[in-house]
Image: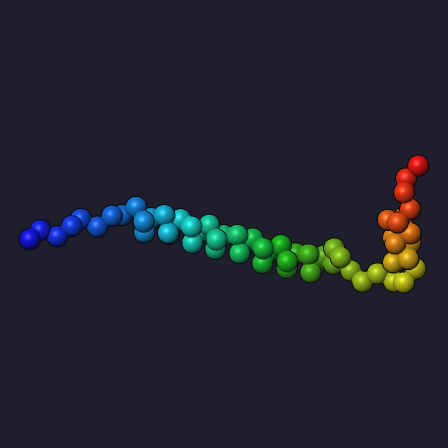
Length: 61
């Protein structure tokens, strides 16, 4: 009996999906490292924290 030809589509789609996920993970790691080095969200002292809280809670007029 002749063997069935195997589909190439499923492995190609799987490879594309895994490549896309890998790319997203690498971008996330690079972004996290850049944010950590630049200290984008650094520690906030109590006075600044209170000011932010007041500004957020007070409605604009």
